[in-house]
Amino acid sequence: MSGLVKNIRSLARSASYLRCFSTKSRIVPLKKLTIAAQPSFTNGPILAATQRLVLPHERSYSSKPPLTLKLIADRVLLVLKLYDKVNPDKLTLESHFINDLGLDSLDHVEVIMAIEDEFGFEIPDTDAERLLRPADIVRYVADKEDIYD
Image (cartoon, rainbow, N blue to C red; front, side, top):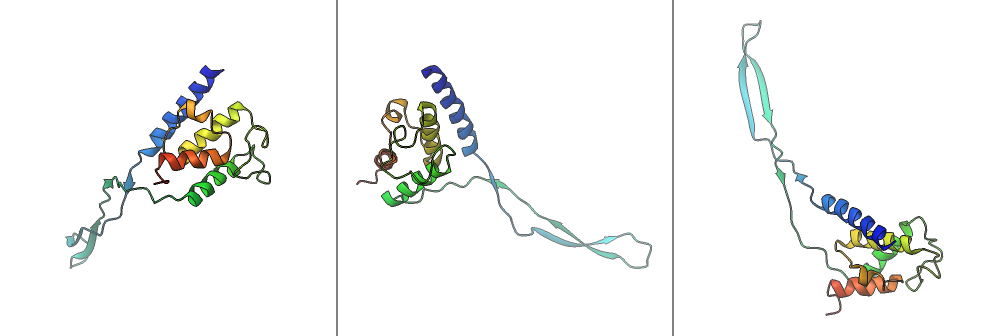
């Protein structure tokens, strides 16, 4: 069972890793506008404008927005509310995933993977086993992001 869970987590991480490195195109002002003489059946040249729009690919790197405990808690609760097996009416920061929300161990792994995707870092299996409430996840993310300084 643990081998299956590790394989599922490995596949999900590699898919999320590939999604992280996307390129972003940006619109650049028109580089060239010329008036060219074109052959025609009339006596004079036809005025034609040729436009060249260059869209270079560029990667933009920036720092993450500053996190607060309130923002982390809101994001964790949002991820859990969007999970189809969680009843949003029963969900609080102190809800136990297994006892209160009725999730099983595979659901717990999926929740942890969703949290990893939301916050952009990997949670080791040994730490994930101890995260049984949303409040535990909030504390863990705050510790990882050094919110308690």
